Image (cartoon, rainbow, N blue to C red):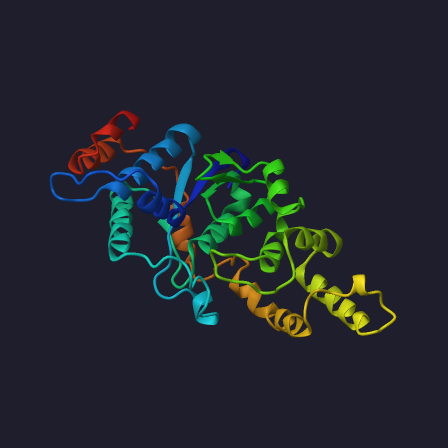
Length: 303
């Protein structure tokens, strides 16, 4: 692909917005067919704002893969405390998928993997051919993608891009490649993962600034632990972490790489990437027909 054909692609973390549309936005009354159109309306309106405001050459909606997440298989407690989705929620997710297919909006997913893994794969696969990726999400895990120079993160809830200042205020360091390592050390309530006690946000960021990757931090803390067993070591220099916790952290290093770091998927066929890498054509007739059928006439002016 030549330099002249490079383009801007918006990649949407579908679950971030569908969840927000279903649970967090203003409820709407049912239409005359008795259908609750809340998720449809807000997701459709969101897509139209993406098209009209960001003017991408292409849009890809990343979906959750079918079946139990591979992370859940490795670690059953992963996301165990998240609110259990209602049956109606999944029904609406399926209907939104059908809506996207009808509107000819490109979608991608990988079986057993989460949408954020698919997003990482899209960016890795098309990186050289793309001037700019805009990733729309509320998921902090995806902040690690800012390590790519051509990636911007747009916060769905804040309705704005994550700036360098925003990033530094959140993590207290400046290099996105260490986001995962930071999240592994602090409590991630959304994933129900607390790998280690005794490390707060400041300590985690200080350790990253000094040592970088988590394996380096683990090695440093283990050495510090050994030193603390020497009575000549001042008490203030002794680590807060217990030996058992360090052993757990060290033993989980290989699992952590699979469990949290975004995966570049090889089980998405190349034909699927190539099929979806195209100019998105906004079909106003399809959008208008859908809006009228679902009685979402208030979005007609955005089409």
